[in-house]
Length: 287
Image 1 (cartoon, one colour):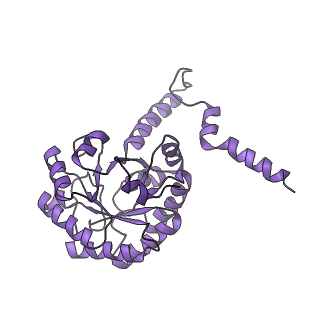
Image 2 (cartoon, one colour):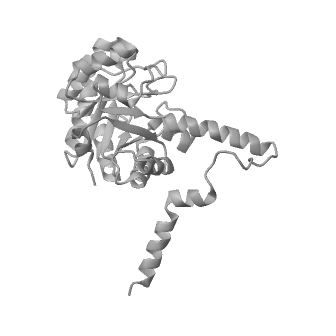
């Protein structure tokens, strides 16, 4: 199994597709992802039918980490920890819970509670010292240095890019392994982030219809980013498909034979039915 450490140290950019449940995580891993990202936005919507405004508890998120990490294993999982769900002690406890649940990295941001999705309007951030204390607490709480702490700042939206860069420096000093400057606006700002933090494992968060230019992984690698995060691409695509399927069924019509979908047999293959039945048969034959 290749650790997140090794993948961060290796060549090339890491494309981190967003997963919002165990099935999406399993499919991302099967597609060849070298790292998977558990999106809080997606978990809030897919698991609870709620917007991403801080309504899902730390315990509920930790349960989702366990399921999603198990589904994409051995691919490392980066898990959204929102704002740590409280103060430094809460961030430390959440870090231990995520690590125990099988994640390879926790992401902690500097928003107030209740928080909002990083590409929504109306965000607010806590003081730099308070946010840095959470990062410091998370870094100290982990059992292994192989478990990574990703620090995210949302200060670009509230205080401008220069303040976001200052916070990034503070979070690295506090012990962050990976840095995530949320929602730079324009390629010039992305370039400035990369130039400011040369040699740092940097995240570029690419959200459809979001604040940041929609660039592909190759362009982001050329700028100097290590992780190209696409947190909601799959969620938005699946949501559009579900809307269409349900509307068709409720009109009293079945889905046309040529409609884009996997077959029942293919779904069972993807979910691992054959391997599990083979394992069960082998176990029952053992004496």
